[in-house]
Length: 308
Image 1 (spheres, helix red, strand yellow):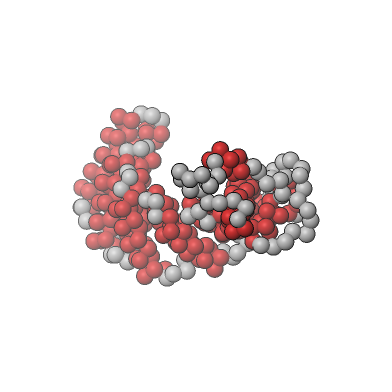
Image 2 (image 1 turned 60 degrees about the vertical axis):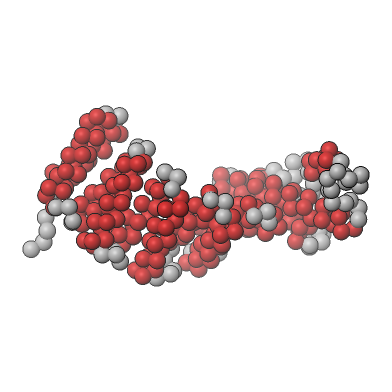
């Protein structure tokens, strides 16, 4: 005989959710607690419906910035889900992922990474390694590593996400461009302006093609590309000048060192060439045309027009 779900705890949960949305917090909290109590009384502590109630409540509490309560409920959701549905259940994996995100939200990033990495291992057992939904989780790991200043590890995870996105969604897709954008930021944090410029250039091209020049993603990627190219050009020019003996490396407390004010002036200069020519310069490809002294050549709209 199929199991019939109890409607009373669901109605109490929905009433609590609506009361909180209407800023009636006292009534809302009371109804939510009543809902949870009803779930536990009707089904018992160890039941899949109770695990789902913990999961839904944890998500709701996190959304209203009751993060400590959300984490406590998310932990209970994991425990009950594992014991009633199994460690290889999709709902158990979801419970682990939620717990990881909520732990990160309370600044327990180390604990969050532990839960999310465990969830990824379970995910592989259930869905394999090529499931598109795992891209978001891999990205979350990369972002969390960035918050711990583990920039190299973060960049590796973004590269894994990109490889998976290109495999399941395709290279010239918004999904892959989004990961490329994040990867470019990661490379910039590693002070690799050259590769960061390449990746951001690819992202900008795809966004422009798929979303158009007026989309926010396109504008933001071109704006960041302009910043990256100027920095990469300065880095390359500095290295060339040092190699040729035109300038010397800054040495503290020596008469041969370039004054810091002069260095700042050099770095403040913005190369007048357009972004395409700057990228070619960084990559070591000779430009077909001379640099144009026109101002505003890094304007995203003008770049978009040239790329058409």
